[in-house]
Image 1 (tube, helix red, strand yellow):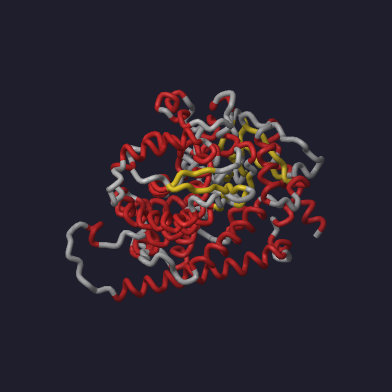
Image 2: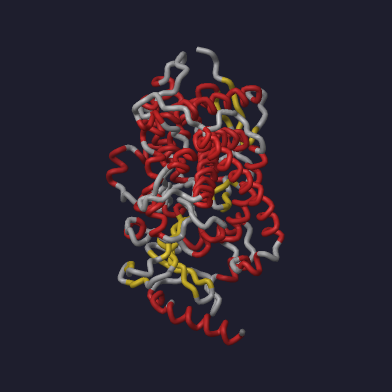
Amino acid sequence: MLLLLLFQYLSLVFTSRYSAKIPTVKPNFPLLGQAPLMWRKNSRDAFRLMYDFFTQVDRAGKMMIGPKPVILVNHPDLVQQVLTRNDMCGKPFFYDFLGIKGGLVSERDGKKWLITRKALNPTFNTRVLTNFVPIMDARAKKLVETMRPLADNGEKINILEYLSECTLEMVFSTTMGRKAYELPGQKDYVKHLESVLTRLGERIVDVSQFLGVFYRMTDAYKKEQISRKFCDKFTDNFILERRQELQQDTKPKTVDDEYEAKSLNFLDQILTIRKSDGTFFGDQEIANNLYNVMAGGNDTSALTVSFACLFLAMNPNIQANVFAEISAIFDPDQDQMDLSLLKQLKYTDRFLKEVLRLCPAVPFVARETSTESRLQLDGVKIPPNQILAFNLFTLHRRSDFWGPDPERFDPDRFLPEAVEQRHPYAYVPFSAGVRNCIGYRYAKNSLLIMLVRILQQFELGTDLKQEQLRYKYEISLKLVGPHSVWLKKRSEL
């Protein structure tokens, strides 16, 4: 056994010779690299550690997990070079920790992912997204009615709790086609999903939990399994129920438009869509993709709007500008949300982009080099099966692209003339290139709708300061502590 381990170690040393020319981040321990620093880290410490590593890197650097290098890519030139390649769609081993052997986010095999992505592209086309607008708006209206009793009493609330329920209802409605505001087990599902993501985020940056045989001995594993079983059962039941409903629905369609004739929710489409080889998605593939869409659509949208509310509360002048634009475009008596009006929210759109610059929903992204091609970064040839990691949190704070004060919140960074002068890959909040986020436009619509409805009704305040914010990594970027704000009802015009 000892000889086998020694052989594996020496094999890794041999294959990692290519990285000798790439600077290593510090501190660096002999033989172990940065592994001791990644031992039993919590999500807050892990986030800070990765921040410290990447701030040492200008273009490309490396961290060593024992003899295994992880290439840290931190310059827009190199980010673009990697993310735009069709042969760089694969993901490294720690995506297996998600426990989902496929899906738009979790699929490791680049070729399989490309097939799935191509098949699912129509599920987020313009017609589909337009039809989702009134569904999202209904949930946003319910959100503000829920929060109305909390206004004008000076009470601080963790607005993330309320926004999480709203985004979950949006996801259930658009993904599952459910009309009910609250489904049986919905709140428990949120809690269990949160627990799973917390466990996964901490495992990814804790080398003591990399090996399954050791991870299965931990309390974290036991908690994850309890929550995972609940979430799996919850989604599996919906798939089975909806499949049966579709089989029983023999009513003839009375319209000619194929989009009007069939349901537009994600579950119905993936149950009936064919892949490029003519086959349908199997039950497990459907469950995997549904899990990906529901987890991503709920968690990241709720967090982004929560950060947006915090930044509005911390910057009253910007809040006034956003509200003024909303008031100018949306008639107070207009009850229905209109996608064409949302597109006119230019300043609000710039504001949201600045929120995502400073608080990208998923701060860390990784790729694995293909077995069939070669990648070269700044003259260094990267062999197959090597890990490349990106930190969007640090990328979005480079002073050479964002100015001498990159922490300053300024929506005008996204004025057209400023964007034109900046490197296109200096800002990639939803990833970019070949494996970009399929739900970007869906997320943008939901974010704008929630902001419009919240600001039409409330003025936001907080005693938090931007420099006080502390972050942690749990797959998505989260705040240490609550997204604490108070609400003040706007006076009737």
